[in-house]
Image 1: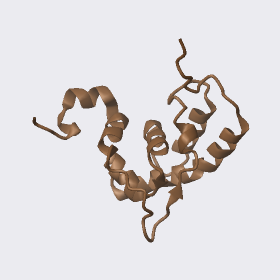
Image 2 (image 1 turned 180 degrees about the vertical axis):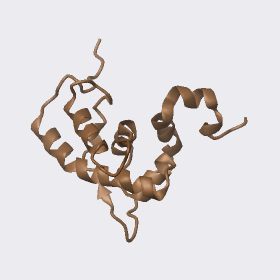
Image 3 (image 1 turned 135 degrees about the horizontal axis):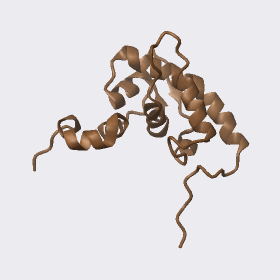
Image 4 (image 1 turned 90 degrees about the vertical axis):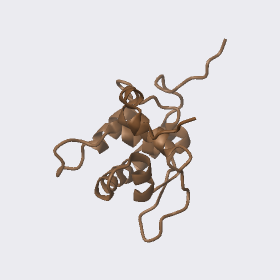
Length: 143
């Protein structure tokens, strides 16, 4: 069986998009050890963010993440919202090394995502602590 990197599978890559490819690239490569001499953020919203659907209109979580993605005034375009969702949904100890591993971005871009995540986590914590079970959460299927 021939195993190739996902970047070489053009049709699959086009269908998944960049953030979908990030998830596949990161599968099995997670490193939960803290990076020495670096900012390490414990992802305290990991379990709660798993239940949120990305890109749901009117969802407070999506609005918070979209706001954090567009905060850097030195950028011409905002950060990718789906990538921020993936970082929050997949990485337990968030640091630039893990963001680089997941996304394949250079160190400078990974630091921008790190700043956005560092900014947004306290707001997500307070939001998740203030709610019960809104409609945009994924509900278990019952028959």
